Every structure is written in structure tokens, then in C-alpha cells.
Amino acid sequence: MSDVDGRWDCTVAAPMGEQNFVLTVTSSGASFTGRAEGGIGAMDVAGEVSGDTIAWPMRVPKPMPITLNCEATITGDSLEGKVSAGIFGSFPITGTRLT
Image (cartoon, rainbow, N blue to C red; front, side, top):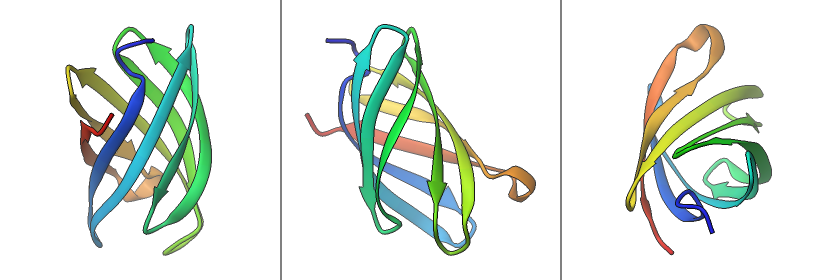
């Protein structure tokens, strides 16, 4: 099991208010699969693992359809990074390990 594996209680500080979701990560070498579940709905996700950093695209349906490019670094039981929303800019993401 990699240090990035687990369930993460995440918050994105977006302009329309904080967006909360639980991210489940199961790594396999340089990639991972998982699921994001929260106010934006539930969706399967997949991405890359590089050391303690994970990166993944996430297509959200609301408030408007957009693909978010997420990147976060894991330090112990903390997750910190950014979510890039194209022309709308980048927003911080933080999280804590649930399991």
C-alpha cells in the first residue's frame, strides 16, 4: 500500500464557496483509481502517482460542465494541492485522511 492510498476528506476553496468531497485512492505503481463523492455527485476517477503526489482529471457536471485538473501532495495524513479550472483559475485543495 502506498502512502497516497486511503479515503480523503477534501475541501476545494472555490469562488462559489467551499466544495467538499471524499476521495478514495487505490494506487498501483505510477497510477491510481478511485472515486470522488460529494455535493457535485459521485464519479470514478483515475490518475497518476509520482512519489507522494497524485494528479487526476475530474469532470464535474455542475454548476456547469467542466473538467478540473487536480494535483495534491500527501504528507502523512494531510493532502494539499490545487485544482485548475481552465480560464476560471486555480483553487487550493486540502484534505485529511479518513482511513
